[in-house]
Image (cartoon, rainbow, N blue to C red; front, side):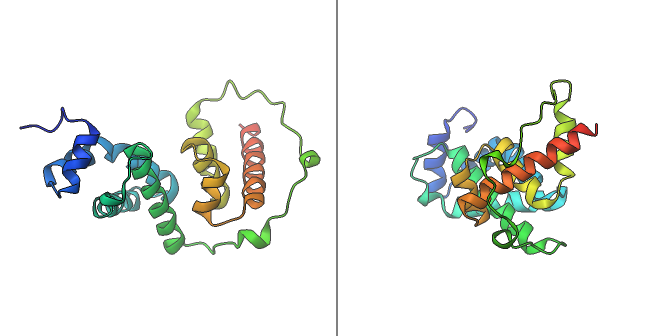
Length: 183
């Protein structure tokens, strides 16, 4: 019998019983989206594939911890994001900067909103511009705008305090604005 017609709740229930067909169905439903999440963070297709698969393995081993407080996809996405960031930090060819030391608090009046009209820009131009930013900016913009995490979630994921998160996001936005103005 095919599991394609089952709801995700039914599949999760089967996964809790270690049903490999259900795990395969869950994987097939979410692999493309989770791959894209991993790719935006690790910036390498092969590593993103590895990270995604390892994230799924972790999710299936921790499936009993899923309490259905959020949608299954959101729970899985958080695992993939955290695993991607951990992987990136461990395997980055660049020296990780200590965000707590390099950031300072911006006052509300320290920067002005750009009046540039970005309507004419295509989504892929914006995405490519984000990919060209320094890693900490790229990561925070990806988490905030693309993945939809709020400040509190980003502080937990990146291990920084709330003020530094706001500052980092503000600087990343300004850097992106400058890069887009060059287009």
